[in-house]
Image (tube, rainbow, N blue to C red; front, side, top):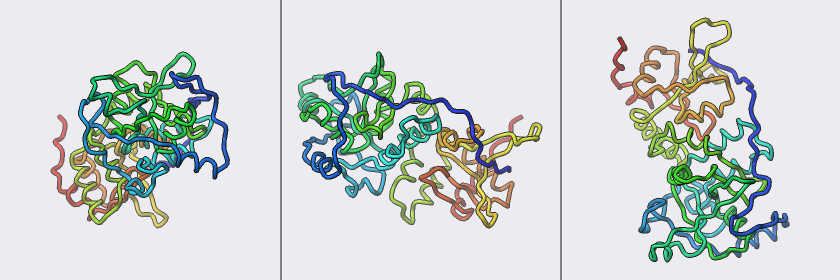
Length: 341
């Protein structure tokens, strides 16, 4: 196994939208208010909250369960709407001129929990009447983007910008939203478009990449974003025995034909194999590494072959978890994969 230090790489400069306009209203940029005024305005915005089984479904279902501890009613910038905290907080750090690494880091955090869609009018009544849901979208130049929100505050920003207070917030699992974008003709997904500079665009091509190698239940991502308990480690290890996993591989300088697999090393020299829940997690490390699929049985074989590895570090960009060999006992018990002839 070889440990790779961080390496810089050339990056393109995808831009956040500078002037997004709601298709229904040609709006001027929202002026910045002082903090007290902003908080008062946010609290005064009336938003009804509805959750449905999925885009295209015709009947309401139970509200989508939040996946982050801060989302369990403890972090609501608008009463009744639990923020997608990981995504919201990543957007607060998102640069005005993002580099590729910034976009990839955002994309991996999008794959957590719930996004909010904005419906003009009462979504329940519209569905009952058999009418289509008028979901919000924005235009940037000649391209149209679907819209989603990370938080109640971001949704309130959008309502203040166009004055459309007759709004339903429709909470949806992120995979439903991303597939809805690809099923239509949108050029991508605009996230919190009225909350500049904390806003971003996911291009259609990136969304396709996000969905091309996905655990349909986002099992590990959900566990890592959720509240940690004594059962978290065992639940993650159980998931590792059956869901897609990746490692970061590269060819060290001067090593002909030899492929190294990325490890982490603690100050005392303890080594952990780096394992990832999605290829984007590897790309977001901003190293010259490639994501290589490696299922649980092969990860177990790698650990058995190198007794110097103390365990694994899963999704080191965070939320992360470090698992010891004792934690990994169910994984290590997997039979060795069949050798290829």
